[in-house]
Image 1 (cartoon, rainbow, N blue to C red):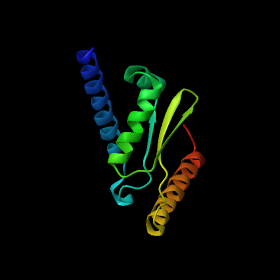
Image 2: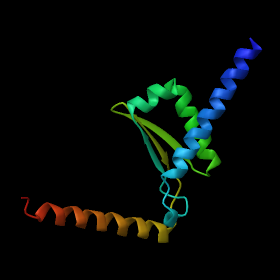
Image 3: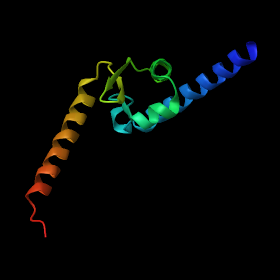
Length: 114
């Protein structure tokens, strides 16, 4: 039994490392580590193992990054979110970026297609 436990522990540690890497990759440098969000598809989840293990590993990975991590399963996707309070200047940056993205989308929608 100890060999199986050791294998399971190593697999779990690799899962935490993988999730931490994915979570780190989605962070925007200008937000200084805030506004973290990772979305795992159903295929990702199937590949990673048991949902409860993935959720637990995601919370551990988030802890490594300083996140206040929460997970939500919606429509077969797992959302891993950082729910820390965001400093006002970073919140303003994110709001400006969201507004600019909506403006671009609206402009693209107005262009004639042809």
